[in-house]
Amino acid sequence: MVLRRNRTAAIAAAWILEGESGVGYNPGMSRTLTISDKLYQRLEAEALARGFENVEQLLEDHASNGSDFSQRRAVVDNIDRLRNRMFAMYGEMPDSTELIREDRSR
Image 1 (spheres, rainbow, N blue to C red):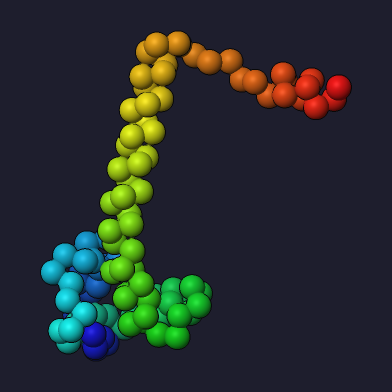
Image 2 (image 1 turned 90 degrees about the vertical axis):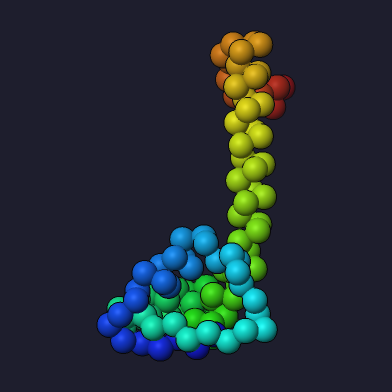
């Protein structure tokens, strides 16, 4: 992917950053994306902060983790449903911190 900096089409790169990458992503195809200088600087700073050498590596990493995000979201949704079922069955469960402290102090 080639990123060309100028003052137009920042929305396309923001779309990539918002988790929509992976849709229609084909690593064998080359695309040119025109983004603003400001957005490119943000992407470049983010890439360096995460240990990448350039923006392209950051975007490739983000695209490859897109499916991981949906799996993590599904797990969190399942946990939330389980918590709701447990609350419906047992009500508010007391905090066991004090009991654990007592056990440890013995």
